[in-house]
Length: 434
Ligand code: NDP
Image (cartoon, rainbow, N blue to C red; front, side, top):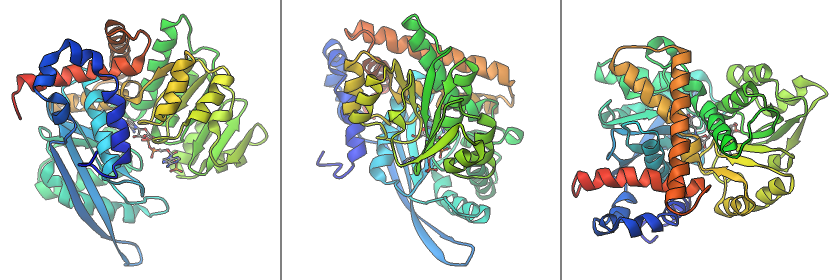
């Protein structure tokens, strides 16, 4: 705690993992002797850098860029870049720490890292976004490489930003190194189903959890928070599996649509116009209404999918969800549920999937993109989606059986943490004191 002062989210993420590792440390004392916990909590490398850029009026701004290369035990550092004014070192470290275990759970050869900047893309023109991305990559490029560190998108970083970042990397290095970034456009090295993968994967994981309890998503009423990449494609897959998604949100409020979200309209507003969910309610007409502020979890549903940001579902929200009869909660976002809320849900017997398991489909499909780039190949949507579904089943089953093996049946938090930790800790032991 003293070494990482003020890094509140990082402490929260570490505590949540360490609290569950007791049984594996008792059974595997070699991990304790090799001081795996102390080593795994310290990033291999942390970079903080200046990102100067000029806006359209010529005014100069200076942002702070970050890349935390947390663990390369299983492969090159892999994890997204977040552009949001709230970004600081503690947030990047929490995301990077989670990423180590999430990436291990996918079964793919990828280490853990995360990065971003305290830059606010809202209201910025395409030209400003491009200049920011170019300045950001002008420093970051020297730390990247397909065998070293492979970033992707996250909040505020989608296809447009990855394009500008890739262009600048190529220009500086004079290398068309497709495997250095994932989430690329389909015409220039991107993978089918990558855009959809995190949201789809989260819903596939939810379907597996419900299946293990003898239920399915068909006919269930679902609340989704957020209206970005993860939220949109979680909504799409839930609808494909027969559920009715009745909400979406952004930082200004939420929409409730009793007839079910009109996904074509939501995509038009968010993906084309870069608008707000309040516009969805205005354009949808009588069935939908916009409610300012937080409160999306007060809507009665069978399944809740928090897909916006960290710490967005609190204990009182969890209590309300439980009172309204929620059966399953799966984290599309990273750490959206506070520890107190997780406890409320678990004690009430709600199936709860932590983000490092439920949202791992995105990074797993990024690893599939790297695989296609390395072999100069590109797979069909159907094939990639089938691989994603297999990976999500594998993650579900490995969390489920690990939780059982370590005496916490049905506890996906324990299962995900221990299963991911064992893979990384074994690799660290094998690779010596590095
Ligand atoms: P986007 O930028 O596409 O969307 C983020 C959404 O969350 C927007 O609706 C945004 O609303 C809302 N949001 C962001 N910050 C806040 C906040 N402080 N309060 C309320 N709402 C907020 O991001 P993604 O969909 O890519 O990411 C969402 C979550 O999923 C993040 O936790 C991310 O780390 C996680 N994730 C993403 C993956 C991916 O492949 N994209 C992979 C794995 C995890 P507004 O526009 O008002 O800010």
